[in-house]
Length: 374
Ligand SMILES: *Cc1c(COP(=O)(O)O)cnc(C)c1O
Image (tube, rainbow, N blue to C red; front, side, top):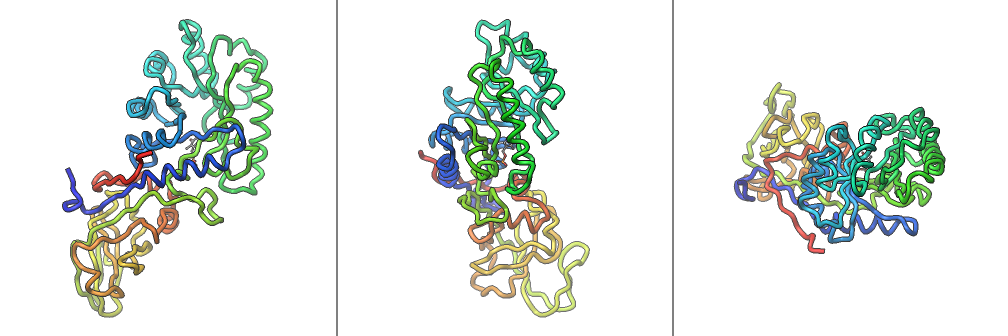
C-alpha cells in the first residue's frame, strides 16, 4: 500500500473538475438532449470506481464502457437507476449474463442481432440493447450493406427492445472535416428508416468533440469521455474544460554535472556546461512515455525543466540548473502533468494524444481523490 511519503509519485484526480466538466458539456446541449459519460479503460485511467459515483451525483444516468468486465465493475459502483452500456463485447453466449447483470449490450452487426433476438423474444420482458450503425468509422457497427438488409427485413427487429441507436464520428475533432456532416446525414437517414421498428430508442452520435460541432449532432444522448477529464475537445481552439489530473513525481537525488559528462542510458544527453540534474521516481513502467526522452519537460517550482537523457523504466532525469537550490532538492515534487502542463501538451511532446497519456497512467502512483461530494 503506497502512501504519499513512500510513493515515487502522486496522482491527484479532481472529481469536482470532472463533475463540472460534465455539467458544462450538458449545458451546451440542444434542448432535450441528455449527457452520458464514457468511462471505458477505467475512466480513461482515472479510476471508474471513484469517477462514476461522482458523475452520478452530478446527475449523469447513462454510462458507456468498452468491455463486458468493465460493465460488471461499473454496475457494482452505480445505483440501480444508472444505465450501463457495453460498446465492444462479444454477444453470443453472453446474452443471459448481460441481462442478469443489467448491462445493455451494443449490437454491432447482424450476427449480434441474430444472437440476441431469440434471447430477447424468449424473455418475459425483453431486456434492452443498443444498435450501432457504421456511418463511416469502419471499425464497429452495422456496415451499410447490413443496414440495407435490416431495412428490407425489419422482422429481424421484432421482439427486441432498443435503448439507443448509436453511431460514432471519425473526425469530430476536425470541425471542418466533410465527414462530420456526411456521417450526420447517414445517421439521420438510417434512423428515419428504422424508426418505425425501434420503439422508443434514443439516438446518439456525438462524443466529446462531436458536442462542439453543434446542436444538430446532439440528438437524444451524447457520449463524452475525454472532455470530462480535461482533454481539449477541439485541438486548435482554447480548451474550455477544467483540468482533472495532476501528476507529481518525487525527486530522489540531485547531482552536479559538467561537460563532457553524459546522462542516462545510451549517453544520449551530453552536458554542455556546469549544472545540476534531478532524478525523479517515474519512468515508462509508470506510463511516462519513453518517447519523451530528451523531448519532454516538467514544471518544478514554476520553472520549466527539460527531460535530459532517456526516460528509463522507473526513473527520469531533468536539467534543473535554472532552478534555485532550495526548490530543486530531494523530496521535492515536480509536475509531470499539472496546472501549467496540460495532458494534451504532454501527449503532443510524446508524439501521441492526451487520451493515451491518461489511459496509460501507472499503477504505482499514490492516488488521491479530491471533491466529488455532489
Ligand atoms: C470512446 C468513445 C466515445 C467517447 O469519445 P471521447 O472522444 O473520449 O469523448 C464515444 N463513443 C464511442 C463509441 C467511443 O468508442
